[in-house]
Length: 328
Image (cartoon, rainbow, N blue to C red; front, side, top):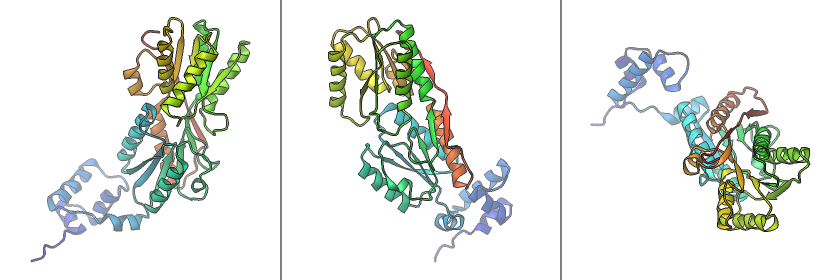
């Protein structure tokens, strides 16, 4: 004999509430007491009720899916950011589809096609590729983190300029006379370049040469080490380095020590990011800490507003702070 399926009215009868109340619980609409919500969920569990998710999504015209597109999780900053975004979205009832582009434009475009075909409700992006038309040719709600995508897409960013000032001022206060900076190539549309602008302006203000070594985020480890070795070859007088991220700072410290330089005795290094994992593995590094968790929650809040058809600010800039290394 075929088992009869459990219906919405069965759940309502078991919970002692109306069908409308059960529907509101399922769709997370309107105010309901936690006691009522618990009663409905208990009734669904007892009756083994499984809501028709597809029908509900068609009715709501939403999938409760959000896509994330970032360069990689093989980096403490992006790993923490994506993990926090996933947690924040889960708290709001969304599931996440994650794509790591490895800074490959074709791969990012492929992810975007898959996400659009999967009918996600919105996107949060932070990959660094340029000229991807899908971002401009869609009505899908999108929020960017630390990346300028288009004029219509809001950006959540740390105060990179203030961070650049903090880092450079710290090196100057430590008595460094020859400070070098690393950053992305000038043409890349990234708020990251505000760190460079701050460094170069402050160095000019102090009548010091502003020397920036350009390092692509997606360069191989070997390429980055070659650049940092060249930095020391070309500027043996360097006594301070403001690295644009903590990963580069770690590599610079490694190269310096291999060359017999004492960090921080005769070479001061300041990084940028301050992710939890970096602080655990490299506590001696002085760094500018970005509010990664706050960046994630702000991006989710902006995306929800855009999915609801509300206007949002073009840019949200969040404060940074200097974290002292344990041996500084």
